[in-house]
Amino acid sequence: MATINQLMTMFLSLIFLLHIAYVASSDLRPGFYSKTCPQAEFIVRYVMKNALIMEPRSLASVMRFQFHDCFVNGCDASMLLDDTPTMLGEKLALSNINSLRSFEVIDEVKEALENECPGIVSCADIIIMASRDAVALTGGPNWDVKLGRLDSLIAYQEDSNNIMPSPRANASALINLFQNYNLSVKDLVSLSGSHSIGKARCFSIMFRLYNQSGTGKPDPAIDPYYRKELNKLCPIDVDQNVTGNLDATPLVFDNQYFKDLVAGRGFLNSDQTLFTFHQTRKFVELYSRNQSQFFEAFVEGMLKMGDLQSGRPGEVRKNCRVVNAPPTSSSYS
Ligand code: HEM
Image (tube, rainbow, N blue to C red; front, side, top):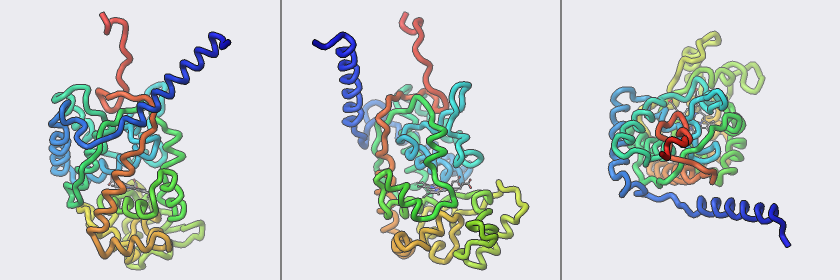
């Protein structure tokens, strides 16, 4: 005969299993808000259009959120949470501090959505829609996004520190990292093409300009003329928050990034290594010649990355920066 304790444990396991099964079957799908908030996608696109007018770079900054959100325990907007006295947020994680920006654009989208249909659209879905819009509005492909995510109840600063790659990373480390998420070598290269828009800090390239792999010398893969430009932008005593363009057309989502890599004009080590390394080079060459193939592969990669889910419990936050307050007894009266 099972004891009360054993029965209790079996009951709790069943609940847990049911919960996981529920999460696994709660498939994301296009048009998730078509009945509950039909204007949702228009509202996001509208705010992103305004952001483009106000500060063109902010679209790149927002697009980057999808990567930094989805790689750390799934696409759950955990990286949007501010620090609290009891929880360290991801905004101060190694790859994010002094680097992730334009959180206010997401705040604006959220406010507009809360006015239209309160409590319906998750911050995690906002990131996915806004990233797609950033690409489409800067000249890249447009695609249908799958929606229906929930927002996390906590942030994972330590996981972010451990997971997010350094700008020093080489292609083989990046291949391994992406493989953990079922993302292929092709996905790695096409998704890196997101660096077709936006900027990075001198901080991210000082080592490759002055001390690549501890040699005391620059990265030999940099084209010498480009290196002169970079040395001018980021002299050894520079304020390392000074920024440079990630490719030659930083406001246009196109395949210029790959053309630059072929010419030895990649900004980050993690970019240029994709051309140096044999396994990734063929994709760089292909995308440098064929923009439509790049766009197609990029959309495929974004959809796969957007499917990453932790299966942990969640909610639809009212404010993307904080979890909802737990209901108090007075909420029920
Ligand atoms: C493959 C591994 C990747 C590495 C190592 C990497 C690293 C970086 C670094 C170091 C920066 C500049 C940070 C700074 O100096 O402040 C940056 C910027 C950026 N990253 Fe990545 N990244 C990777 C993949 C991705 C992916 C998959 C996406 C999106 C799909 C993405 C989107 C962006 C964008 C748009 C910017 C410019 C942001 C801005 O202008 O504010 N990156 N990335």
